[in-house]
Image (cartoon, rainbow, N blue to C red; front, side, top):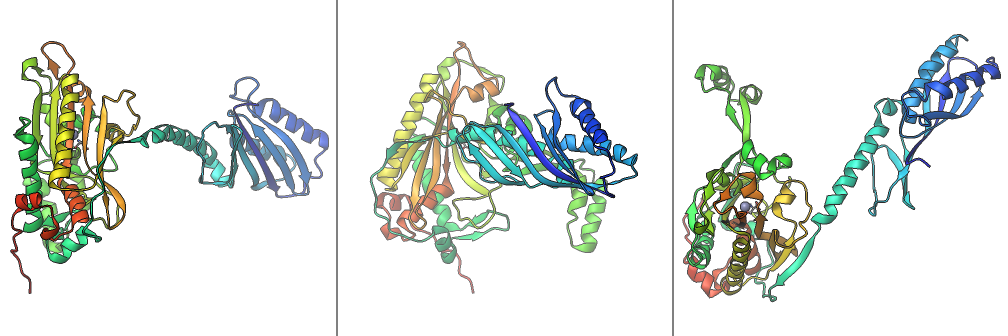
Length: 499
Ligand code: SER
Ligand code: ZN
């Protein structure tokens, strides 16, 4: 049995009765097609073959089989052209083919089930073989739908290979159960109280004085518990990211469906833009089409936060004695094109994150990730008093590059922090700690004087995510909050009243 087999049954309709064609003539035609026409281009022994040929009035009942060369839909096309010539001699025309049955059989040792495929009415997957019954007409065959289904299967196989691995999740730590003081969605409750309001943009909020004060309290906690005691310094990372950065960071492999794209004018010559300005002035409509012609994409908005910072060290060599280096950035927003539908502050197109980056030798970087994790536990336990857990997962950069393969060694990778949102029962990933190995130093050519390999790590603290978890578990009323956190926050300002 060949690795791939195609079977087709079709009825070819003609413009007149075929009964006058002698059976010798028919046999000669079929034999000649089988000998050359349907084998052309295939390696010897391969190709297609007519296995059934019956004339019934004005119809030809046809059976074709093939291997992966001259697949039966190609064979049918070839055959129809040849047949048209043959029948022409008898002054009979071709009226088209009705596809009664189309089957693809192939080796298939995947352990996952195929559920649905376009143009496939039945999927049979057993004993290491896959059998697809297609629902196709002549038009679909001319459009090479069977070939595309096979390509689709290959893609799915490839995706499945990574998918199994992306499901990697391993519990590392689980806090004690904590009392929940709230069973509502904090976003809705904050909106009701006027702490936040949907901004004009998709997945974007305006944060009022109360929640802003809470965000700043989170940052103060980071300063007091992490940045000051662990010797961090603040930097300001760019928030517009060029393609060159994303090529080096690997994001260029898969960021496309989630990026916020940034464009610049092709020229800043006002004359070049005059038509656009005039159009707006007379219509009050922004002429997007005209704008699109006059701009070009140069990259995107900050997505993972740390990648553009690496340009600071790009191509440099550092003396070993300044290690480990510890810096953080809290200078702006990150942007991701999220799935549609209504989300609260836990899933945004524009969000705020404190990004923590450290570098050193492999040992220093791993050691520091442990220190950070200990500090985070302290914060969640003693200050925020939340219920959370920590899990070893597919590294964020691998997931974002679209290759969710896991590194075998447990040295490089991501620890995700997850907490339950009582109002939905769902778990939310609210921050991570990642050891990124030599990925960034290598991608941006950063070296150590001694020649020792430079490693780095990063950790993103999502302010909205921290708030989503804390408020979902503890509610918006400060008297239910842990005293330590209440003290860090202070009074919540009431600024606005509306009539
Ligand atoms: N850069 C990492 C991320 O995007 C950590 O913040 O998840
Ligand atoms: Zn990062």
